Amino acid sequence: MFILKKIRWKVLFFFLTAASIPLFLISFLTLREVYRELEKNIISENNKMAAQVKSSIMGQLEFFKKQLSSLGNISDIKTFNREKQSPIIKNFFKLNSFFYNIHLYDSSGVLKNIEYPGGFNSKMDLIDNQGIGDLPETIGGTIKAAMSEKEAAISELFINSYGESAICIAAPIFEFGSDSIVSGAVSAAAKISDSAFHRFLDHIKIYDNEYIIIVNSSKEVLTMRGKILPCDLGRFEFDIYKNGRKIELFNKDSRAGFSDGSSGEAVAFAGGRKDLIFIAPIRELNSAVIIGRPYYSAFWGLRSIIRYIIWVLFLALIIAAALSAFISERIARPIEALVRGLNKAGQGIYSQKIEHAGEDEIGEAVDAFNKLNKKLHQHSVIDSFWREKWRD
Image (cartoon, rainbow, N blue to C red; front, side, top):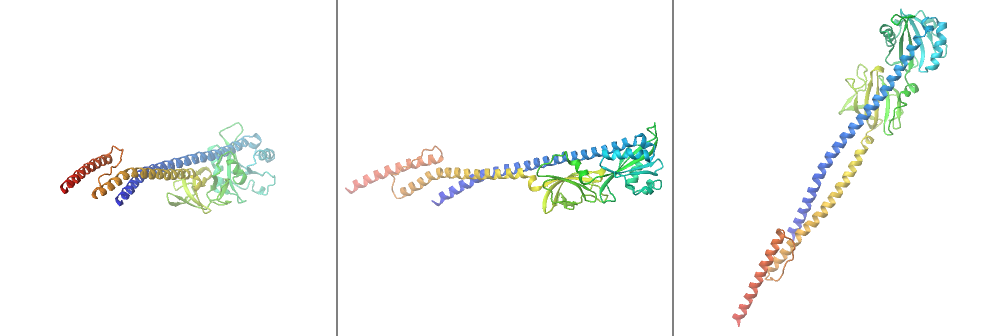
C-alpha cells in the first residue's frame, strides 16, 4: 500500500506543478506588462500636466509682455513727462495687480521716472541720476535686451528687496510715428510667488493622489497645489533618485531638471514618504515644475491585480489538488484491487474477480488478471478432483 501512496503523491505533485508553473509565468508576464503600461500612463499624464503648467505660465508671461508693450505705446508715456505719465501708470496698476513698480528709461539708459501702486516714491532722488548700468545684471540686461531687440523681454527669477521671488519685464518705447527708433524703455517688476503665482495652476486639473510644486533655483517653493503634499513646504530639499542614483534638482549652473537640463521621472523621499515625481524645467524662469504622487498610490491598480492573481492561483491550486486526488484515486483503486487479488492468489484463493470498467492499460491488466485467476481456479478444481480420485 505504500507504493500506492507514492503514486498518489506523485500524481498530486504533477498536477500542482503543471497548474502552477504556467500560472506563475502568465502572472509574471502579465504583471510586467501592466507595470510598464501603468508607468507609461503615469509618465504620459505627467508630461501633459507639465506641458499645461508651462503653457499656463508662458501664456501669463506673454500677457505681461503685451500689457507692458501696450503701456509703452501710449502717447503720454512717450512724452517722458512725469505729470502726464503718472495717471496713466496708476490706471495701469489698477488693471494689472501683478506689477508692483514701473521704471522708465530714456534711450541713453538714464532713469526718468519711478511709479508705485501706492503713489509714494521714496527713490525720487534716483531719477536722472541712475542708469541701467547701476542695476543688477538680471534687471539691467533685460532692459538692454528690450531696447536692442526692439521687443519685450523678460528676466529670470530674482529675489527683490522684500525677499520675494520676482521677474522683470521690459518693453521698448518707440518715438512718435516710428516703429523702428527706440526712444526709451519701460520696465516693470512682477511678484511671482504666493497667490500671484498660484493663479498659474488654477485651471490645472489634478487627481486626489497627486500634487504640483513649482520650485526656483534656490529650491524655494513658489507655489504648490494638491491634497497630499509631503508637508507645508517652504523649500524642496528632499533626496531625489533616478535609476538608483542620487541627483540634484538643479545642476551647478542652476539649470532646472537633470544634469542635462531635461525632464523626466524620478523618486523622491519626501517627508519620510517615497514619492514618484516628474520634473519639468521652466528655463525662462530658471525654475522647475514637480508633479508627484506617493509611490503606493501610483501603482495601486497593480496591487489590486496582484491580489486577484493570488486568488486565481490559490483557486487553481485547490482545483488542481482536487483533480489530482480524483484521478489518483481512480488510478490507485484498481491497482489496490490487483494487489489484493495477487495476495489472495498467492494464498491459493482464485475465486476473486476484480471489477474495472476502464479500457485503459489498467483495465487490460485487470482483464488479464481475471483471465489468469479464472484459469488458475479451473486448474485448482481439476487438481482437487484428481487428488480425491487418487485417494479413493
